[in-house]
Image (tube, rainbow, N blue to C red; front, side, top):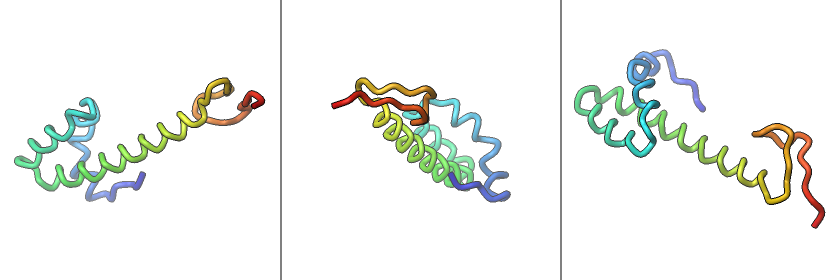
Length: 87
């Protein structure tokens, strides 16, 4: 995830906890409301949240591929010491 510039951080910081506490399906409506009051903050947050969603989706896909039936792992999120049963 890209690191927000100091200017962007100042814009999104007051709103970040609030939007991240929402379920992902409620964030669009929340952002629409914020656009009316703080358009710059809504725009910056929308871009940052989109990047977060893409990263979450990638991690989900990588994790699911590593959890094939019969596979075991010693540590969630890694393939260290993974064992795949013979075919």
